[in-house]
Length: 388
Image (tube, rainbow, N blue to C red; front, side, top):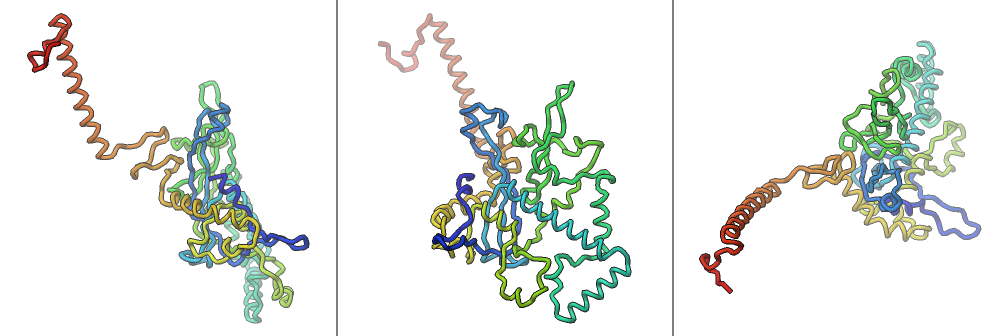
């Protein structure tokens, strides 16, 4: 699957020498998180090389995010694109964007909500802009709610003093526990899928690449000074809200005539995850994807891969893997050790096999007694057999 996504590059025009590359325009769509999933797969290189990178296991854990590009913020049942991308790429882009938005929100809160008089003046100014037909929403990235943002931003600023650590600081694999004299294992913290892929949390792993998740351990038991994790920022990545892919310039609105002539642009986070992702677009009637770019570079590669990628996304979405990446068999997920619960038919077969085994053992014992008693020859003639 990684090889398929490795070919899922941005679709560009087969340009002449004087032409410029043109990217797929997804600026009118909304990015929406769908599912997080670990998938364990066979790693031939690890087996051949005996590399300790994967903790001597021939299985590696791949981390995927499924997301959609929706035609509106409220609807995503038709005319959408569905995509699969590695978790690292998705989190790197979306978390950086969320951090930027959080910072801008708190800056706006600080500027506009320093005191009640300032807040009232700001509300009055916003009302005047609206009455004048001015699109203040495009001029400012944030219209802050002073009733809530002051407390929220104070909590963010005083997070460490209040005994909390930012969960997004542990998205990459970090050591949280060093082996000591009691012979304990070195432990690491990293991002994991939780709640059947609906959430992303920080888990505890037993290897330096965060391949082997230990569900029995709680990361907060290993943080310094008994700190707790704050998931407020991380929740914005998967909480169900859609994010517009339109690039918004905080200076938009200053020149209305120039704005009318300006081509819409896709923001960096949507562009980054779209370029890196495996794409399933045509079956979902996505009108602005690869099917619209037959004269663009990489079109044939995208079309050739689409059916395979769509099938793979469908397999993950339907629950073919459990939280640790093990394959789910007959509706029962396999355990971290690879075992799974037996079905009713399997139990019946085991009972029949056990009874048959006992019967064969009893016959063998009887035959052995006859051979021993008869001096090495069983009286087969008495059983209806013929002597040679």
